[in-house]
Amino acid sequence: MHVIGDSHSSVFSSAAGILPVEQHVNAGQFDCYHVGPSLAYNLTTNEALFNLVKTLSSAIFVFGEIDMRNIHKRVQEPEFPYRLRIDEVVNRYFEFLDKVPINRKIIFGVVPCLKETPFYDFFKGRPDQLDEYYAPAGNLRTRNKYKRYFNSRLNEECKKRNMGYFDLFNET
View 1 (tube, one colour):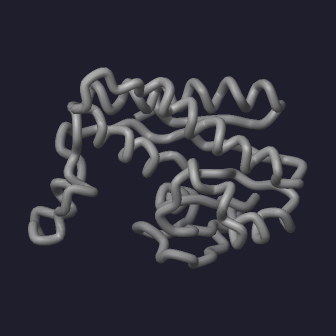
View 2: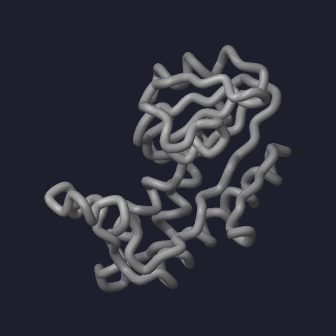
């Protein structure tokens, strides 16, 4: 089974950490491709990715984490319509998936935030690298609310299309 996605696709490899960008790793039952930081929203414009996946017979797609970070950044805006924004991301993601001519598509949902200050451990030794992209926005509860909604929308759309779906939200 092929696994294609952002850094979270690395969990399917046997690597001890995140796979290097654009690296393909055969990890037994999974062929993992970390395509780099990619927005699910922008996959419709990623011709190279489309050309890669259209040759496969089956794949697990792992996108959406970076989209959720982007939406979290806007938490502070008054009247931020997070459901509308997430629906937009999901619609664009499935616009791409609907074009992919492979028989078996499985979607892996985003993982929950486990800490109030994600990335703290990674950046505590290099604070100069902690920029606003990685600095957490909102609080843990709000970030997970957005992610739960995103995953529920992914699951709904997968059911409509008879695609596989799974996440680890309640397992972590």
